[in-house]
Image 1: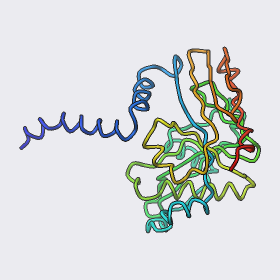
Image 2: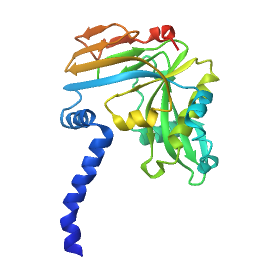
Image 3: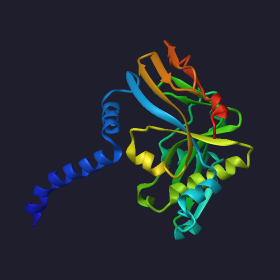
Image 4: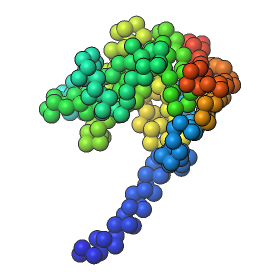
Length: 254
């Protein structure tokens, strides 16, 4: 029995990786491998689309009560992290730290879902306004005043497939709407099939797409309208990142 299990281990590993490749997409998987091999300081390439998320009421109609029907929801609590301890825990959970060089650093706020049963943070997402730096790309997203940018979402592996992610996004959008935010924006790699599938019921409309590449101190991006500029270049991506303006989202037909 033991020897048979050892012989099957490599086969099972290959099957697992092939299943992951199919769910995430070939191009996205290649990009992940390249990013693991090549240091971020040397090279980065990314394709991403900017989307506006549906509001909570629109989402409930589209997803047919997917969130509300989950019995675990009563055991979750949404928290806006304010204390240093909460922020440190959120950073550890989401593998994200505040970039102090980003002009919007003071606005970068983590929201988390706490399991009231286990009293631990099980999911988190960050929200900012004004601008957001894609540090690895040398690109700075310039946001409309009435928009919020959501990024670095993460759900603990032991708590996935319970509707927690939808609960998190739904309630965060509802909270930022109370702060006079007209829309919530996110970026998603369209070649990541798993991510696109997870967000399908959350998306209201596509704003535009951008291709960005960084080599050492050089960065270049090509974007589709209403994102601008259509082509952006910088030779000092740390000190002078490319300003990718998202102000045109106000003019996109809803």
